[in-house]
Length: 327
Length: 279
Image (cartoon, rainbow over all chains, first blue to last red; front, side, top):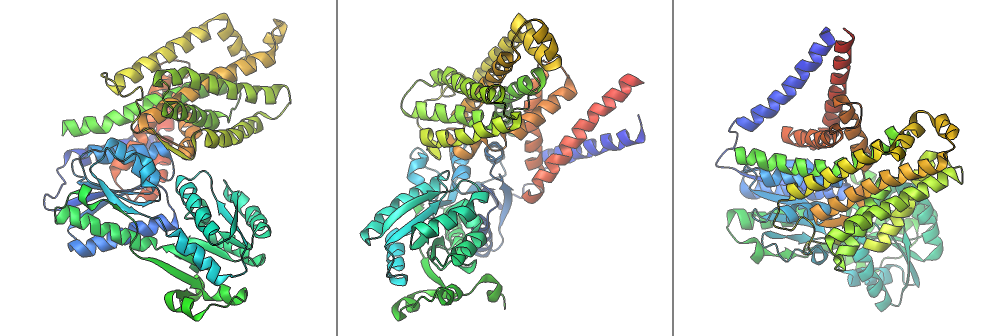
């Protein structure tokens, strides 16, 4: 064999060696609890959930908890493999699943270890009634409060365009509730679906022609492309209302919704309750977020020449764009 | 610990067996009839959506397998017709059909459909692995039978020497369509099994199918370049590579890089084998 091939073989053997070593060596520290984190995909909001969760749980437990972090990167078979891995390993004591597909994969497989879920909008539709080991937080928002925020900020709004990805379960569930709430405020709503990142710019242009205001649910696709969405909306001078806080610093006008970092922290508290204080997951249950905030972007308010009433200014948090925030 | 190891390897095997349907499908389209077919992701999703929707309204889970097969075959038929009758480029045909199927799946099964509490073929007295081995076995032997029949010979001739088909007075178009129909019916069955094993359908479930299938096929051809059990082993191998990546437990941002490196290393093994033969 040529030296090149020997190198390759050596590499393979090293990789397999590491694998076997990790399998054989008793690495589990008996004192420490290990939480396996399975994240559906890389995405700003989901990353925030994870970071908030880890920092808060480390604080609560005085660094007594280990984490194994895995990310399925949106590919279902990979999410499934990660779930199987967490289920099989005895060293993983509990699992934290972020966003719907990860939750579905792990809850189907694991019936014994406690599972904590977060960033799920519609837990009822997932058929979790058989699982007594699941608890966590949803990212449901108060759509009525969101609609009244629209009424307060843009009193002349008669038509709203809801922009969302019909391929996302979380969005579809939220959009249904949004339409009901908008109707209560006397605002007519039109739906506009996008499936691809490349369609977003066109869709935002169309949306701003069809409505006086654009509304976006906690949609993975659109929130991921928020700078683009916000930019197009501003060009068309159309106010943009979102359902998650970080999007406001990326150029949306205002949000009434969950702060994903906070969601992670709230779930971390549930983990603490179950793993350290010994409550059962069933009694902890699946909760709606505790603090949803109203956030308004000062820059966009000025650019669109919108007047913010004193009442609204008092109860909401004013932010600038992300770039200005850093100073 | 042995028990733990079994628990780790078992799901890899299950998922690998399911993706072996995809590998067999891609083998037919890319190797037998030499048609680069991008319908794969569409028909995989279609198979899953059909099964999910049908099981949720109470249709027997076993019956969904042949129905998914028909669905996949129809997808292949449309791709074939677009290519042969409307003279569209083969890559474009597949893309168009996949794009169209996205909407159909969304209409039929929604963005996410849980069949958690419904009965699937994997909920029975027999272990899942037995059911899968049986199904893969049936698929494998029937494909072997088809490829050895006269029709199979003509399909293979279409890939290697289309002129021969013309000389025999056979229609190239018809055999192209037939090949695509067989290929996509296999892939759709894979999609159906995938949904039934997971217990839910997600519209995002088909993402990455093509890469998984193609890599599985390439791995299979390292073992044996012609049709054989290697196709199934290749599919299982790919799943094992990702499982190994997770097992290494590094920061997940490196997962895809590690996966890529492992695949390159394995393909290099093929070259070593070849050189040995030359020597």
